[in-house]
Length: 124
Image 1 (cartoon, rainbow, N blue to C red):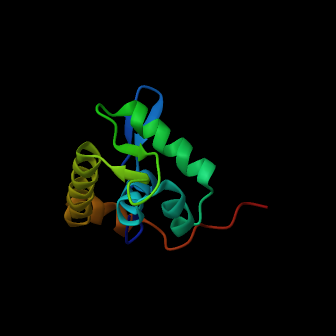
Image 2 (cartoon, rainbow, N blue to C red; image 1 turned 45 degrees about the vertical axis):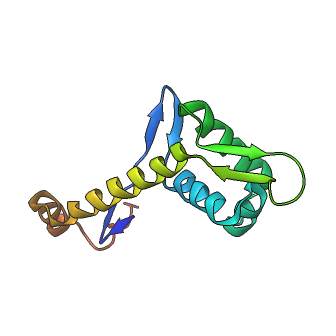
């Protein structure tokens, strides 16, 4: 999320793994919208393999898992976000909304006022 010159990127760690960040939150939401990991990956311009690896990492970090895959034919196939996954998305979006208020903080204004619009060229 960009707030003027301030970039805010919320990431949640699980040991050394990245449990959740903006991309994974977007992937979770896309799985909820599209009903499959492959359709979510296509919608995001991501390979299925990459999407599957991100889902696997999230599932290993949250208890219970955030995505469940459904085998078989008909309507009951693909993937869906679990109740945990929906709660994770909601909480992450709430944190992002709270982080957006950083632009109202006096420290942000002080840093923004001291910041150049462009860096100086490197010395020759």
